[in-house]
Image (cartoon, rainbow over all chains, first blue to last red; front, side, top):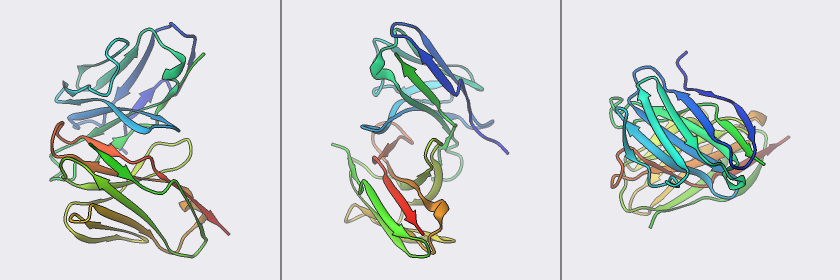
Length: 116
Length: 112
């Protein structure tokens, strides 16, 4: 049963600390998305990769957020320094444009981040 | 600009039918998705429409009218487990390929 995995599932940290979230996309999927979800804003796209290349990170605060794909099986989202307003659930999703035009995105379980 | 609107909350009775509407205004259009999200869990894919008309999948159906920028998700024979948030998302053909723009979701409560 292929699925997207994310670690850690929960993270509590103090303001100013570095936070790194990891995602393993479904094997064979070549698109990876990072989303942030809050009650107020809903689900917002932060960054998007295709074949490990960043295609869009316009939704990401560049001064503190960075996203990378060191290899096809790992995507990382880093916040440095973290701030209380970064508290949210961060979802990773992967997809395969080869699935005709559907390109359904499959979501991981999320990382619930709390910055104190 | 990009805008997707759906009701914030809805309540329905077990066994009944409920329709969740979604209207969208995007710079491009390359498909509309519905996702279900239970509290504390990840969104899961429900349906996809790219052409006008109705797509039926068991108890769930999704309708699309591109000329009206409108879609709805129809849930029949409601069950308690259908209590969840339902997210409407549009794939904008311009800008990033494959990028989805999500609405804020409709929280559906199914009561006995």
